[in-house]
Length: 304
Image (cartoon, rainbow, N blue to C red):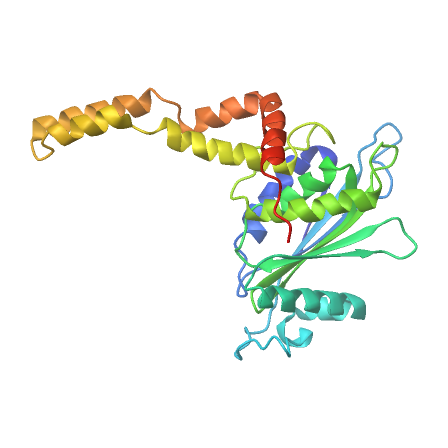
């Protein structure tokens, strides 16, 4: 088992590394269990930072189930779990995780999100199940998400199961002495936006570094991402003039082919690149929010 104590300041660097090295490429044959804990108090009398510990342990999973999954029967938790998880987890946790694992299987690997209120605490438990390899940077992105809504997590867990499912469990509370909305309101938003984060192939436009109300919310980050991809296709088009010229020239002629290639290279070198488009969007976040709101008003979500 590897343990890594850390403080708030290094989290933006540490969490993506945990995703990259231990979580993103998990398989039933090679995966890592993760337990994280945050101190109740601050680092010192003169600092508001807390201390966190991250415990990583190589999973010891049984062989994948040989039988075809029967949704009416489901799995037995003992048949697909790490022995350390079976030893330490409560009966309630095993029941919750098994329900999530079975539901992920029924949905063909699509993410499943369940929420539970912790008794006698102003704390909520969010349990997310998904197919191994179905997303990337999810653990670190979820951290950004709940921080955006002025929540913190005193403890988090990641477990893997031999049927190819990962279960991520977050305990969430409101950050003390903030003007955050009731935790139920924030949790409702997190449930909706966690699914967006799961689907986004890149979360470069989502940031919670400046706290709630600043940076891009997940909906805005999604809108910015779609705009980024659209702009790449639009700016990299060679245009009708190039197509007309190409139809006149003979590409089998080496001289003509060289002329076409030089024109194509010049057009693409002098237009916006993938990185320059991203830099422009990130440099002007004030342009994204009103356009996303306008788009939402014109295209409201479909009701079920």
